[in-house]
Length: 225
Image 1: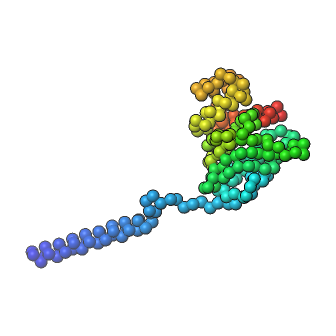
Image 2: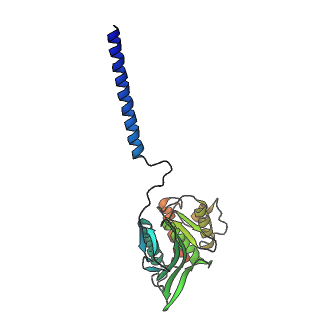
Image 3: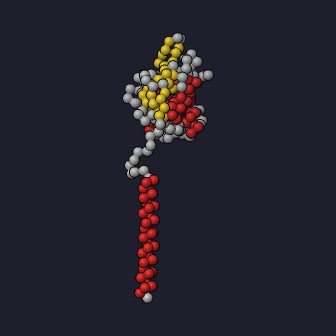
């Protein structure tokens, strides 16, 4: 009996030790596989570019995240396609790229008209073209902020209605300044648009795209052609 009991106890000890060893090895493997707590995600590679779409980037070439630069290309091509026929495609863009390559602060868009280079958009100039350019950026980016001095800062991401304070502020201002709906405010701007004949829901994906496109064309006065 004693020998049997001793043998059984030893087997239990050996089985328990093996199980503990397996848990230890598994935990160690998981620890090696997982990144350290608080470690930063691997940095995304950046590309160096000296222009956005057809326009030269003022100053030195800048480093962008590749997909963000492609979105900026699409935005400026969209802005140009809806600009007056008398303007050339943008020849220069003045702005600043964020350190991570995924944000851009726009200061000016320059075009050629009557053989002269002009600022079609300028950050410090509060006019319909400023609001139109703001609309074009809202058309392509989820986060657009008006900085002190009028510069426009965008962050990479898919476009669409988010209901942010910046989007609502733009929508109310566009209703008042571009559609002439002076009574529009943050609570009822959509109803004002509806009464003015803008039938698409501006808070839907397609409705927001239509509203911002119309805002660009109204601001640049190209909505008649």
